[in-house]
Image (cartoon, rainbow, N blue to C red; front, side, top):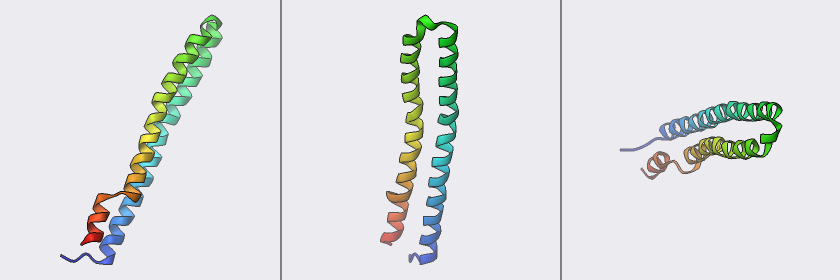
Length: 93
């Protein structure tokens, strides 16, 4: 079965759209989540200043966990663009 240039270009284009969607959607959730995390931490410190150290520690841990979601979206986008096994199989044909 021969793969023509149009099929390869179409698959490559779909991979680029998928990478863009992966990166875009993976940044929306963490962006909103981080806003809530920092906002609620500031609110908690304003209400009970004596708990500042404990709240900040929890805030940084939660921030790191939420930021991992954005990094996973970035990894998926890079895999789609540069290490896509489907595109590799099409090129080999």
